[in-house]
Amino acid sequence: MKHTILIAGIILAGLFTSCQEDFLDAPPKSTLVDSDIFSNEELAAGAVDGIKVPFAETNSYRGRFTPLYGLNTDVEWNNSSQSANATSELVTYDFNATNTQMNSTDNAWAMMFAGIERANLCIKGLRAYGNPAPGNEFGYLLGEALTLRAIYYADLLKAWGDVPARFEPVTTETLYIAKSSRDVIYKQLLKDLEEAATLVPWPNETIATSSVERINKAFVKAFRARLAMAASGFQQYPDGIRRSNDPELSVANMYKLALDEARSVIGSGKAHLESSFETLWRKYNQENITAGGESLWEIPFASGRGRVLYTFAVRHNSIDQFQESGAGRGGNSGPLPYVFYDYNKADTRRDVTCVPYRYGNATNGIAKQELVSLNTWYFGKYRYEWMNRIVKTVNDDGVNKMYMRYAEVLLIAAEAANEIEGFAAAKPYLKDIRTRAFAEGDRAQNVDAYLSAINTKEDMFKAIVEENKFEFTGEMERKQALIRWNLLKTNLDLAKAKMTDLKNRTGNYSDVPTTLYYRYKADKVTLEVYGLNRGETTNPGATYSSMTWVALDDVKINSLYKTGVNPDARQFWPIWQVFIDGSNGKLINDYNY
Image 1 (spheres, rainbow, N blue to C red):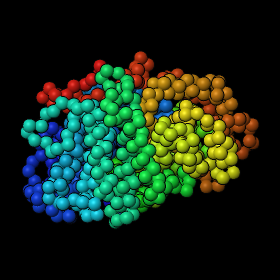
Image 2: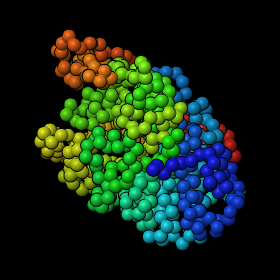
Image 3: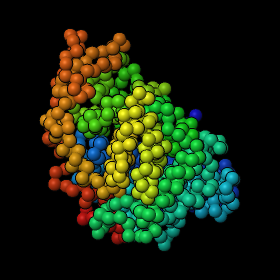
Image 4: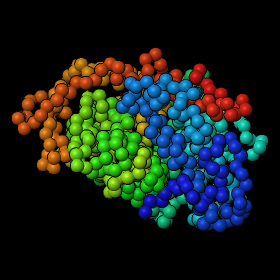
């Protein structure tokens, strides 16, 4: 049974400040003293569970951060980016501090700091009263609290850059503080995760680590590797785009750390790729939370909370045989139209990731698949139709957010090995990813020959950038990767050029058909489509209907980012005005926002 985040009536209400309060407000005294809570395993476990509550608040990860951060990239966009509203401003790099989707005291910024405050209280209490050590329950809880705090901070850093550093509970003296260098925060997080890795067991070594809704050693080490790569990567600072000037966060140091941690996870045998790409995503949508597979950790939402499928799933126009949540569920975002055509036809990830149809209006409760248009695709990784239950909750679906998976560990290992050991050292990790992506009969060409043709560090890096695209489209991890590779605007411009070629059927997209032919299978729900693949231009016969497949215009293409805006100068969201105004003059926005 899912380990859930509860919002109303939770037993921890007396332990912590409400998540609806401004993060600058100091928490009231608990009805229990810290020594009572953190010397008792059950109460301490409840307090650590309370760190997760802010994930699910309405305007936190549930309704704002998960649906909106990470768009738009060279592979993903909001399907209504061309519209003029506060949501499109956020994703087209045209945001400001008064954005009406974000400028509220219960926004994700506030909820992240609420989670950090809860973690700080737990960390302080456990150290003082729990005698935490490797192998005991208090040690595990301390490791979990350190990791949860690092998750909140990692997301603050990737969305806002420099933010206040709060690693102790708020006091009257620290109620208002200025931003700190992100370098300082990254170094603290790396230190914290190093400690956490000594305290939490590997997946399935304890009851707690048998579920991906709890922290385990494989995730801690993998997450530490991810942060090391981010800390040493390119990013926007107030004085321009550059790598960190801190020698501790140098490429040499951080890539070595990342490679060591990734190899530790790989060598442990405690996590692995699922047998097929489709198996991975079917298990995810079926809410299989057993640890030890590909998913390393997931943000745990209660069955009536969370908007992952509501936002990202293949669209359902109405209540139908697959969901009873309401009309217009899923489809807010999707792959860029050219992404489908960049996949090798034999790549099994393509049809899982890129879906050209939606479920139309239901008749007698049954909806059929229907083709949309070339400019509107959906993420097939998220599907109500693959769930084991029918979602009935309005606006929420309860499906977890998969925060990190084992495939990323392999690609981190490949990238770090390529940088510090050479392209040959990277090949085994890239091979694992591509072997899973292609059927056995296609591997000689698409795995063995493909890898043999990579003979330089530069070619390996380019291959890793491409593999990241094919593996992670729809998971909203691409934006941070593009930033740290210093490829954000470069690749966004390339994506615009590719979409223009696709619109005109020129360049690399000259063989993409302009007509689709379709009919329904025996179930009268599932489409059979001819003409999606390159070169499929021959009319397959009278049993098929047809439609023109050319609706992609310049307005839609240019909505990837707003004309006149430089995405490289707007890599981070601004601190929202309500928090600037409430900071007693301590907080400001940099980057000419």
